[in-house]
Image (cartoon, rainbow, N blue to C red; front, side):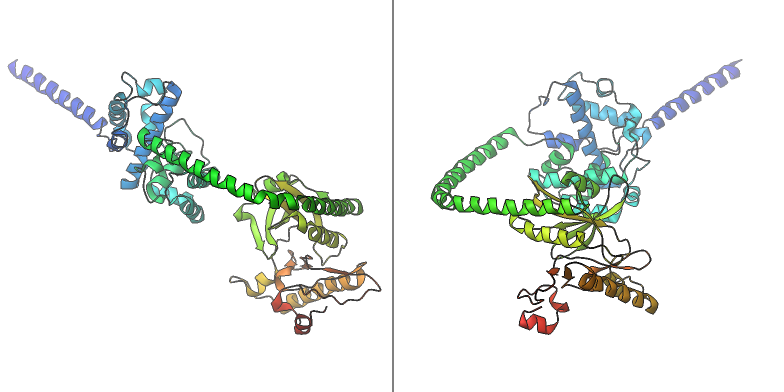
Length: 475
């Protein structure tokens, strides 16, 4: 009987010990260092920045992401282990109650315990993140975010790069967890891209919307800023008074020139729309088709500007030639090029679809022409490109003959005749079957019948000019 009682007590003690051990194993110590936040808030006011619960929860969420960025920087891991989730929330709760007594994070903000250990698209480590995001995108983020983010301009450039990265490569759906896909780029950039790290007050303010600057320093900077504005305004006013009479003197002459130029340009564009079937695109349509003139869409660069590829609403792929350094005084040249290209149609000449003229408050005066996209690049790419495959002799003959046919049509088939004046490999485009298309008529010149072909204006690329034309200035 005694032995049976002893056995029962021993079994009970062992069971209780196992239960206690299991309970301890289920709650591991939190690896997140919340003292990072405590140090940033030291010396500041203990009052919460707002009494609105929604905004309070947002501050709490961003503070947690800052701590996770610090953890990522040290351990190459975005998330703490799941068995430490309860411990992490409890530790964070202690810090929050220093500012918001009796405020329960999880019940007030609706955070689940496991969310702190759940991430975006099953990404939990630095290597997994860098395996999904291309090196080119990470370099773009580094070029914009590896600097002090205290001021608005660099901060805006950095956050724009991060938003672009998230939209392109982290497209997973959020399940409500605190480390969703939208937060990952900022957490990563603060940990590894920005040279100052997540504990820098400027970085915290830009990437996590947490302002830890003291109000005294803010007031002092405001006073200096106001004083600077007043002094600068006074100097600027004196300069304006000194220059006012110059502008007033030239105003009538400028207005007269503007009226004449506007009349000439309006009649030129009107003649284009009446004599051709060209489409006049809006600047917003072109900006949308080129993804706001993304650098990834650039397929060519030249002295006149860049060429972008884009997709129209009907799904057709086109090329947009965007002129740079535009002003109203140069619209006559643009009108000339549109007239030239629109007046000819030949299998070996690039066909024009439309054009755009517009003035944007941010981009300024815009002039753009729209052509069919020739997908096989330029002859220059195939002859001199680093990865170009050697063209066979039959293909070279085909390209040479096609180019000659296109130029012959310009010289003898078009009315009036047209002289290109800038033939070079980069101005000869190749379609899928390597049929050449002569492009870039920006330097073309009309030669109406009965008129001399000589011109005192030398144009074209100097390396491709005939030496007699270059030296004599005659065409």
